[in-house]
Image 1 (cartoon, rainbow, N blue to C red):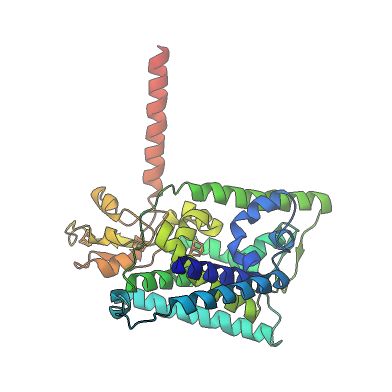
Image 2: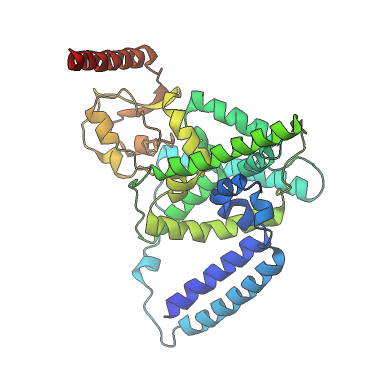
Length: 370
Ligand code: SF4
Ligand code: SF4
Ligand code: SF4
């Protein structure tokens, strides 16, 4: 009961902060933006109700409930410190995980620096948030963030889903949430289930963005480009609010629904690039002379990629749309059988296989007629 009150307090506080800092509109409700576009509105307008005014009541309620819960949770007698707390140790990082974490911290620092410059009035460049580009595209406007995201989508042909493990801020939040959970010996599920859901969300989202963009274009016969156009979400409080709210929410999602829940089921950016990232050049290559088929690498993949199945099929590299090129499996392999490398997509082989399949179908059909 005490724990329940504590969790309720945390949730109210998180909800309040995310309303007050626009994070609720900015990210948490982003997945349903696609549906809203169909009704000709942007999520920002629709969720105008989640404002500072509403947020402050939830913050006050959250603080009050948390304070009450903490009073009850303070032990009256001297209590043994729990094993989870006693054994707390940051999990050891492999070499690629270390590199990735350092890179993510670098990106996070750059973003924070940019936000500070905007916040204190030294710069007028909007945030590079993907949602702001899509929201604006539905009203026929493009800005710097659209150029940034257009470039990122094209770069997938070179480095696959590198953006998902090395650049995305939410990737950093998810990884640190999992590290925290694991350090407290809490389970984080890794398997992917019902991953087709992501394609439904992605189709609704992108379908509606394109539909609304076309409707706007047909009615106005023009689109606008302004370099500084974008949501002014480059605000320090929004950013800090985002960090404060995302960490506990992500820990909750990872613990109960699995590692990288948002990436596997909800994110329309990840959903889109997972379709064509498998033809990207940068891949995790498999050296069959060194591989001992021990399956260690498959155990902890954040995206639940069945590496052992690819090894059984003698795939030259990890060719899977879910692979985000994080490098964790390279760290895992004790026999140095995995490494980053260039894998040219087997275009001629794929065309041949497709042609053979079509030929096979035709023969079957003719056989049926005769
Ligand atoms: S799938 Fe989306 S949320 Fe996940 S890392 Fe990629 S861009 Fe970020
Ligand atoms: S951990 Fe290394 S040796 Fe073991 S199956 Fe994976 S690639 Fe092969
Ligand atoms: S297959 Fe390897 S590189 Fe790809 S997501 Fe899984 S652990 Fe990361």
